[in-house]
Image (tube, rainbow over all chains, first blue to last red; front, side, top):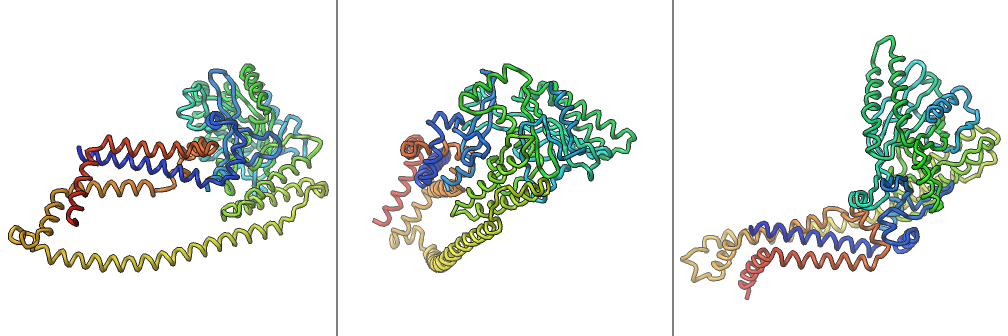
Length: 93
Length: 471
């Protein structure tokens, strides 16, 4: 029983350490790149739903990768987009 | 309607005349091929984004290609949570049914259709089993010596095409030329309500759904016919389709060249990554290949194309890659030398210390007994504490090892899919997110200390006993 308590404690501390590593990653993010990318969304809901604004012309948008989803309840295909891997890696190098 | 599209695109095969205008096409693009001759033999065989199921059979009168692939196209973060909650589906099934109209060595074009299924339910209920069975039938003819090999394979191909044509939600005609040029038609929706609702939703965001779907078809065709070498396979943003104007064969080519150079410049501006410079070099190779294809096709007309100093650019990119590489190597060398020196000295110091402790432990071991207890009370006490708390120390040691191991295992935040999604969701409100992460970490530590207080108390008591020896 005591051993399980140690295991539980180890898991809690490990999860906390991972959260701290996320915080450190955010603190070290490239400010300018993050600002440019953040301008493509209006808020957290847009990011979660993959609604980053993207350019739709002959030149590919380097910052956003585009995809699509099918909305079953509204029977429609919706265009979606999120940060490209290239843009993400530049922010969180 | 879909049937007529198949017939149309097949009839317009460029095997007869590669210079004919494709009046049925609305878009044109290029599938990168560095040697200028795309291999049709490998079309359909892909492992990105998922493994495709394919048949690509060379017959005496042409090649038959039929393949399908699940393509997770959702850009929603945390799709496993949000998709069921919001009634969304991010998996689309793409089927390619195409053929050449000449023997392998003479074929200069492959033409056919791509069929898109909007959901797993559609695919499974309408086409999955039948298409898969027909693909198996075609593959079974690969080494067949049957006199009717061609007819049997073509029959299976036609049946698979008919199944997809009659059941797909969207169909798109295409033609790929040997030099990588690809012509794509407007998508045809099987259900008008689906088309209208989808187009209206896209229009509200200022986007063109038809060109978007055609581009997704292009990405699929690119995935199943070329190997991504100079960019991450998940990034499709180097080339997209261009509007096709049958009377102007130069304009779209200029745009492709500009797009490739735009990608090169994007990678070139990355001052810290050696990999980015090498990727830019790779894309420059594609750019040169495309320019060569254009020159072959347009001859003198291509003289009006934009001129880039590609040799100088190549030298610059190579120099930059070498510079970054040598700088990183120099830093790595210094770090390695410092670490090697430090670790050697530390190892020697630790070795001497360990030998001294081991020798002393061997010498004092016989003194730890009831008889010498009065003469060496601290030694006896330390032995008693070690014996009484052996398992506590062992578990505490394990706890420290586990936490250190997990923390230093890898870059959890940026290397896992969930980690990347969490970072992407949090960087737009950086201050609040950092506070939230740190507060959550503190809460976890506090909660863990309380919930598993038996372990905390045990550790505390063991350490207290140990420290009391030195007081």
